[in-house]
Each structure stands twice: as C-alpha cells, then as structure tokens.
Length: 242
Image 1 (cartoon, rainbow, N blue to C red):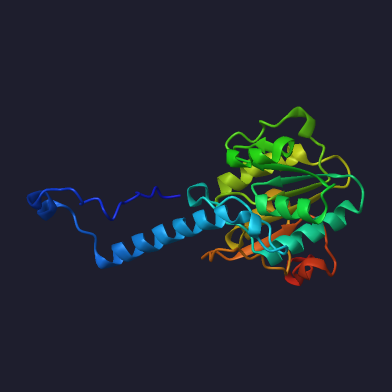
Image 2 (cartoon, one colour):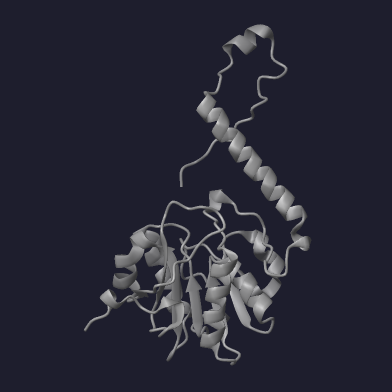
C-alpha cells in the first residue's frame, strides 16, 4: 500500500506574511480530497464514541485503519458467511479460525456466543477479545501458538493484500491451522486472485459476492474447498470439471 502523507490544512497559520507567500498551496482537487479524508476520520471517531448505541442488527467494531488495509464487511455479508460457518460446525463445539476478518469474528460471537472462535490479526486493538485473540503477521506464517496448530475444523481467511506472495504465506498458515480429516476453508479475496486460489489452495468460487461497508474498487469473491450445494450461491458451474 502506498504511504500517505498527513497534511494539515491550517499549517500556514501563525506564519509571517512573507512566509505565507512562500508556503505551498494545495490545488483545489488536493484540498477537496484532504477535506474528504479528514471528514471520514472525524466520522470514524463519532462512530466509535457511539458504538454502544448500535442497532441490534449491527456489530460495532473499532474504526477501519486503511494503513492496515482494513475494510469491514457489510452486515449482510457478515451474517451470510457467519451462518455458513455455524452450519459447518453443525452444533458441535468445533474450533473456528478467522484470519484477518474481525467482522466475521464479531458476528459469529453475536449469533452464537458459545462458538469457539480464534481471531488472528496484526492489529493489537483486537486484544480486547482476550484469549480469543492471537497476534498474526502474515510475513511469519508459521508463528502460531502450538495449541492452535491442526485444531480448527473451519478456517476463514481474508488476506490483507491482493498479491501472490501474501496469499502463499497465508496458505501456509491455513495448512497449519486445519485439523486432519474433514475440515473446511473459506477464502474471501479479490476476483484477481481467482486463478491463484485454485492453484495454491484448490478452491472454487461461489456465486455469493461479498460486500464491504466502504466502497472498494476491487470485486470480491468467496472461494471454498467444499461444495456448498445451494448455499452461498453454489459453486460456479463453469469451474467444475465435467
């Protein structure tokens, strides 16, 4: 992700007249973009302060941090995927791992407080979830607590970056998390990762299209290692071998 500079629109205040004349002036386009960014950040702060007043249909999270490539799912997407995960658990106390998808973790705990879910995240703000939180840096895919290895019946992953390197490293983590025997994998990532998802993890795309609360330019897809049947829009027919 490109590094962004934080600009202060009031930075010329307090300067002498000669200094003001020499101070750089933002173009109207840059100023408009800056105002939009600052308004968005202010909106996040307001949302955080009123998190306790969120409607019952929503789950409040910390504000998105674009510097960490964080974009939360829409309520409909989070509910749909969470329902699928709970179906896969089939009422059994199976462990679930959420790699870089805290929205899904929050909805799973809301829909079934007793479900065993571990959230693997780089952002340590999620330490608020206590023992359910595990610090995770995809650059070190094998650094996992021993008790998590090969212990998860369901793994959901949303790699933070749309690159082959990131997907390959997250795939290493996935292989360490999944339990022997029957286990399920759901991958939420960009359409551009379609061929890589098939090549690296043997996954097929489903008809269901994940959406985010923020508008993203990248089309997102949901891939699975199992046939969901009529759920999640099913596997795309053209991807199946006849």
